[in-house]
Length: 181
Ligand code: IMP
Image (cartoon, rainbow, N blue to C red):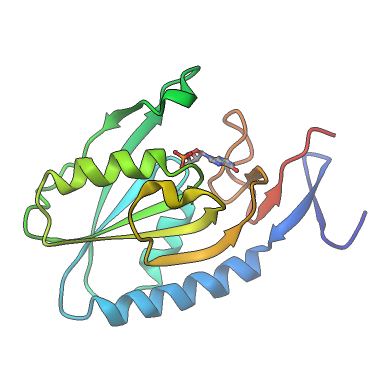
C-alpha cells in the first residue's frame, strides 16, 4: 500500500487530509474564531449530519463561552439540478439578535448553504458567519462569504470525517478521495 493511502474495511483510499492535519487546522481555526468572538457568547450551528465531527472538534477548540444548536437540510433526491433544498430539522433556540456561526462539512455547489443562510437570516441574527472544513471549487455560488475555511479543494468527491458516500464512510478519521476501485 502506498504511503498516502489508508485502509478502511480493506478498501484502500488516498488520503487528502490526515487525522493529524485536520486536528492541527481545526485548532488554528478555533483560536481564530475565539479571537473574533471574544465577549460575544455566539451560537454555533452544526449542519447535520456531515458537519458532526468538524463541529464537535471545532467547538472544543474555541476556548470562550458559546452555545450549540443543530439544523438539517437535504437536497431533493433526483432534482439536484433544480437546487431544491428541504429543511429536515430546524433550530431549537431563538437566534434573534445573536451572533451566529454556521458550521458546515463542505460547500460544493453552495446550494445547501444558500438555503440555510436565507433561512437563518430570516430569524434576524445580529451577525452571521460560516465555517466550512472544505470549500470546493465553484462553491462561490452560495453568494455569501465563507469566513473560516479549513481547505479549498478541487471538484473531487471526498469521504470521511463526517462526509459520506451513500451513507457510508462518515466515521473515517481523516478525509479521503473516494474511488470505486
Ligand atoms: P452543496 O449544496 O452542493 O454545496 O452540497 C451540500 C452537501 O452535499 C454537503 O453538505 C455534503 O453533504 C454533500 N457533498 C458535496 N460534496 C461532497 C463530497 O465530496 N463528499 C461527500 N459529500 C458531499
